[in-house]
Image (tube, rainbow, N blue to C red):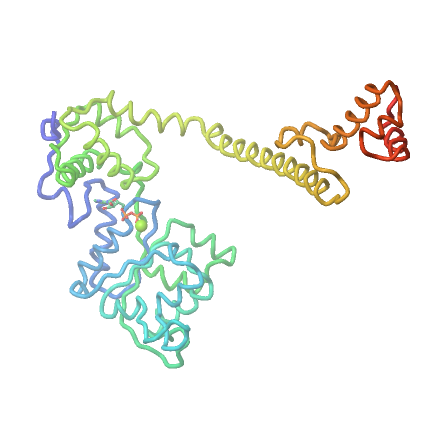
Length: 381
Ligand SMILES: Nc1ncnc2c1ncn2[C@@H]1O[C@H](COP(=O)(O)OP(=O)(O)O)[C@@H](O)[C@H]1O
Ligand SMILES: [Mg+2]
């Protein structure tokens, strides 16, 4: 059964620009975005991951007079702290050893256009000052530079963090926070807009079929209600990826509730048993750590043992040549030469019925040396 047969149609109004959805919550947000788009007001978009923050930032740009200039999306959380000012504001020639030319930062690239700073909560405090200055008077200084650069870039920011909390903790500047939130767009999670799920499913399965060159999946009623009852923690992004996977794995099939349950069950087991899932890696880590410590301590014993043997110059070679012999010997190793010498003396003495002179003669040593060796080895006849 297709979505059409279910009475849901992807009519011409199923989406506004790239924003899919009919639900009241999303319609409200779209209305605010459309109102502020033609102005130069800063917009702060907040919402869980995967709720469409970037999609909205792009929409605002597309509906503004800046639409023919650049839209530059930057993820502040993905740039190493030490590089962020360089990336955003550029650097002056010579400020880095490798810098051979003036380098433009993203702000200059976004001149007359829009810069979208995603994960703004990750911006280090030092860079927050610089950002505030651009917002207040449209100027900044390049890294290593001494003169002001003017720029006309609209700033849209986004976060899934609680900025007021960060302000209270002192990790986000209050003045910047107020400057950024001239307009705020609070994006609803997918849980708050369940009614939009069938439309997303239809649009995404049509896109996936094209992308992977497969026939478009058909979903039965049960399948749709399973997806509407599921908690998509990764919101629209997760749902989209799920449909991509289904398009490939279930090509040509009518997707039933059972098929959906099969795929979502594995995930549910995980979310219903958070303790097990969270404890397991820790237990594993503890075990690995303990084993490593044991191995380390064993290695130290072996190392010490080997060093003892070889640093003792007087010590004769070790009897037995493999590691097992060394490890199991508890250092009561009898040097090969001594053993054979003792045995040799013993055997020769026995041969000559204890006659030491004859034995000494045969061993080609003096009688005195033989006496010494008999004493040394504690030979008793
Ligand atoms: N309203 C929407 N209509 C269509 N696609 C959307 C919508 N919201 C999000 N998406 C899609 O979901 C994914 C995540 O969106 P994104 O804007 O990157 O989320 P966020 O920045 O909040 O993590 C993208 O593939 C995007 O195209
Ligand atoms: Mg994003």
